[in-house]
Length: 124
Image 1: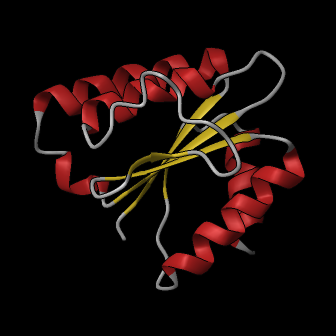
Image 2 (image 1 turned 180 degrees about the vertical axis):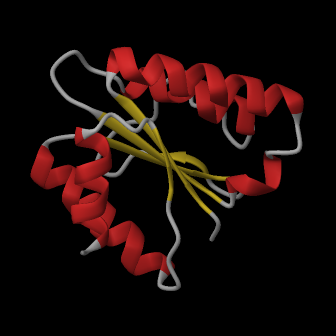
Image 3 (image 1 turned 90 degrees about the vertical axis):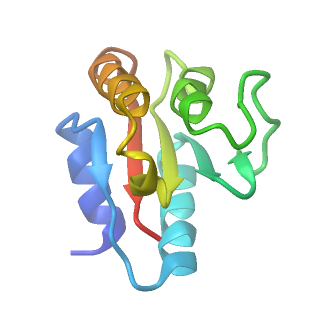
């Protein structure tokens, strides 16, 4: 099963938090981006160095730069009533020792079931 097939399955099942592992980081992000284009989903990526990136789009006003807490909240700016939104957080596991980050992530995971927003945490 390819990464795209597995992600489609998880999104269809409304798993709003997805742990994504790959040894080919750039290839994984390329495949995720292609899947989002094929499904007409909004995609955002975030890492501590570059902050929020939206392929082919403008940055949300509340993208938060390199603030990991703002990154979690920024997914709501990607949300749309007509489609799903996926936010890929690279190396985000490094921030999971913060109570504020974990609480915001838990809240967004629950909210994602209502507004079809999904968070992918990539330890790369």
